[in-house]
Image (cartoon, rainbow, N blue to C red; front, side, top):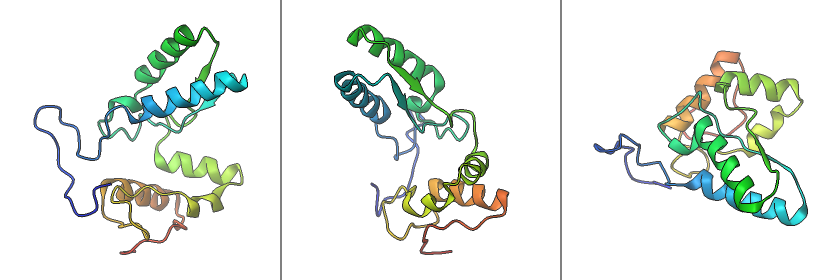
Length: 146
C-alpha cells in the first residue's frame, strides 16, 4: 500500500510505484501448489490485460507461460482460467450483473492506497469509477470523495 505516497513511474521500467514485482506469479504458484495437493485442476484468476497498467504479471503471455511452467514443475495438468483477460471494467461489471453478483462489488477493494473508504482518486479507483459510469450504475463501494 502506498498510503501517503504519490503514484509515480520508474524512469527505467516505466512501471508505476504500485507495481509489486511477481505478485500474481506468487499468488498463482501458491494456488497451484494447493490445487495439486487437493487434486484440483482449475484455477481462476482475475487478471486483466485490457486495463493493463504496465504490470507484466497481468499479461496473457505471462499467465500462459506460468501455466506451462507449473504443469512441467508439478507434472500435473493444471489450467489457469482468466475470464476477465480481455474485458474492460465496464464489461466486467455487466458480466457480474448478468451473473447476479453485482452486490458483491461492495465487498471488493481496488484502491491503491489501501484506504476504507476508498480514496476515489488513485488510478485504480478512477478506472473502477469510469467502468461504473460507462454502464450507468453507481458503484456500491464507499468512497471518500464521491
